Image (cartoon, rainbow, N blue to C red):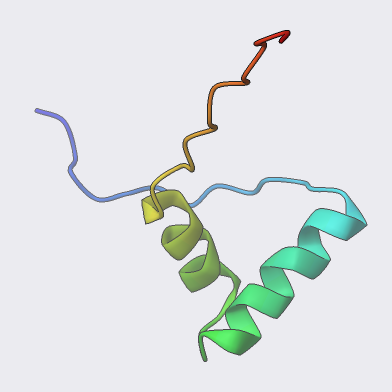
Length: 55
């Protein structure tokens, strides 16, 4: 049977990515893990279709 407990993982990120995670964590009054969970739950933005009409 498989253990349902999530494992601990370490992910290395660039300094600028860490800065974004740290600012997100600070603004949401949480830690880096909370910021990651928040960012993974945020729906992605839809990009609008480019209007290539050449009038």
